[in-house]
Amino acid sequence: MSSEATRFTESFAPRSREDWVDTATKALKTVPFDRLKSSTLDGIVIEPIYTGSDAPVALGTRPAGRPWAVMTRIDIPGNKTANVQILEDLEGGASGLDLVGAESPNAGGYGLTISCEGCVTNLLAGVHLDLIPIRVDGGRRTAEIAGLIAGLAAKQGKGVDLALIQDPIGEIAATGKLAAKLEDAIAAAAATATTFPGTVLEADGRVWHAAGASEAQELAGILAAATTYLRALEAAGLDLAEAASRIGFTAVADQNQFRTIAKLRALTLLWARVQEACGLAAQAPRIHAETARRMMAKRDPNTNMLRTTVATFAAGVAGSASVTVLPYTAALGLPDAFARRVARNTQSILIEESNLHRVADPAAGSGLVDTETRQLAEIAWGLFQKIEAQGGMIAALRSGSFHAEVTAVAKKRLEAISKRREPVTGVSEFPNVGESAPAVMTIDRPKARTAETVEHVTAFAPHALGEAYEGLRDRADAAGIRPKIFLANLGRIAAFTARATWAKNFFEAGGIAAIGNDGFASLTDMVAAFNASGAKAAVICSSDAVYAEQAVDAAVALKDAGAGPLYLAGKPVDADSKAAYTAAGVEAFVHVGVDVVATLSEALDKLGA
Image (tube, one colour):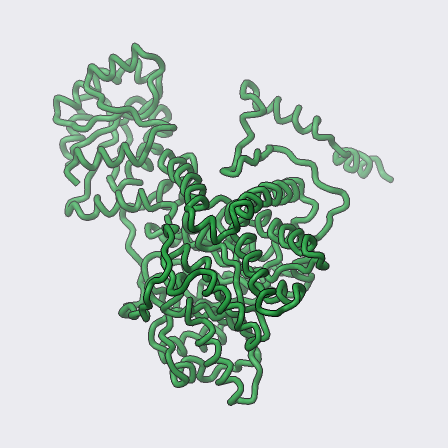
C-alpha cells in the first residue's frame, strides 16, 4: 500500500465514543457537553452521540425491494366528481385508494356520500378493482360501504383487496359519542370477519396523535385498541392466529423524522410481544401510515410540503405497507387536483427516484434509532399495562384517565410551541405576513347521517401545532389595516442585525408587520423614520454594548414621539439596566424564553386588533 493510501486509511481509523466526546467538548469551549442533550415528552433523553451496531437486525416489517402502496385519499363529496379524481390519481402514480366516507371521524367535515349500489358504480367507474388495495374508512357505515364495493367487484367477476377501517374505539374517542354501547359496536365489527376476508378492525393512532399524544401514548393507545379487538375477534369464533391477522394498524408519521422511524419500528416490537404472550408466532403488523394532520399549517401552507416529505420518508424507511400523504392545503379546505398531485408525487419520487424501498429496515443498526425504538417500546408497554390494569381501553375511555394523560402532554407541547422552544416553520418561525392563500375546492360539505347516541365519553379534541399563532394572525388580518411595529435599530448594522431579524420573526408570527431599516445616523433621523412608518409600536434592536450607551435615550425619544407599546429586543444584562430601560419607557422585553403567544396577544390588544 502506498504511503498516501496508508495516510488516508489511518485518517479513518476507528474512534471511540470518548474520542468524539473529547472532540465535541473542545469545540464547545465553555459550553458543557450535556447542554447538547434534549428530552422528549416521554422522558427519553436524546444523546448528542450514539454508537451504532456492527450487526444490525432488521425488524422485517416490509421485505427489501417491495415498495409501499401509494394510497390516495378520496374524500370529495359527489361520487362522479370523486371518480374524476380517482382516475387522475391512479393514472398519475397512486397504487391504492383510501376512501373516506362522510360518517368517518377522519372525514374533517367532507367525505364520500355512498348510500346505494349506484353510488359505488359512479364512484369506481373505470377502476380495475382487482389491481389495487382499497381502504374503506366510513365510520359506523364501513361494512355497509365495503359490502357495496365487494358486490360491484363480484358483478364484474373480479376480486377486490378491501381493508375495513372499523375502529369503534377511535370513533368514540374522536367524537365523544357512539350509536351503540362500545362493547356491542366492537362485537358487531368483529362479526364482519365472517363476511370479509381481509382486515376488519383497525387499531388507529390518528385520534390520539391529533389530540396531542406523545409517541409512547400513541403506541399504547394503538396496542390497547388492538388487544381489545383481538379479544373481540376471538369471541366471534376466530382462532387467535387468524384473529391477529385480521387487525390492521394505522399510525401517524410526522415532521420528526427519527422519532417517527423509531415509533413505527417500536409498534412492530410491541405487537410481536402481544402475540408471543398469546402463544403465537410473531407476525409483523400491516402498518398503514398517514402524515400528521396536527402538523399541517394554515399559514404559509407550502411549508407543509417539507413536513409531509420528511414524514413520508420516515414512514417508508420504517417499513410501512401503505402510506397516505395529506395534501399540503388540507388544513385550508378540500384540496384541489394540484395539491393531490403533489401528495402522490411525494411518494412516487421517494420510491421511483430515491429507491427508498430497496433496503429492508435501513435504520437498523443506527445507535439513535435502535436506542429510541427500544426505549419507546418499553415506555409504551408500561403505559399499555397501566391501561390494561384499569380494565382495558374501554374502561380507560369511560373513566377519562387516558384522556387526562394525553391532555397533560398536549398542554406541555403547546406551551413549548408558545415559547418557540418547539418551532413551527412558516408559523412561529419565518412567517410571511404578505402571503396569499392557495386555491382549494369549493364544494358544499355533505350532511352525514346522524344516529341516536347511546354512549358518551370525553372526546379527544384535535390540536394543530400552530393554532395559537394562526389565531393571532387571524386577529391581525381582521383588523382591516395591518398592525405594524417599527424596528428601532441602533448602532452599526453588525450590531443590530441579529436581534432585528429575531424581532421581525417574533412579531410577524402574530401578524404584526415589522418595518425594517439599515439604522440611523441620529435619534432625530430615527424618530422621523418612525413617524413616517405609520407604525404605532416600536422595538429597540441592537447589541448589549450599544444598549448601554443609547437604549435609554432612544426609548425616551420614541415614547415622546408616541410609540406604544415600546419593546426592547434582548434580556437586560442586570437589574439596574432593566430598571433604567423601564423608567425610560420600555414596556416589555422580548427574548428567548418569553411566552411569545401571550406577548403577541397583548401587543395586538394594545394595537386595537
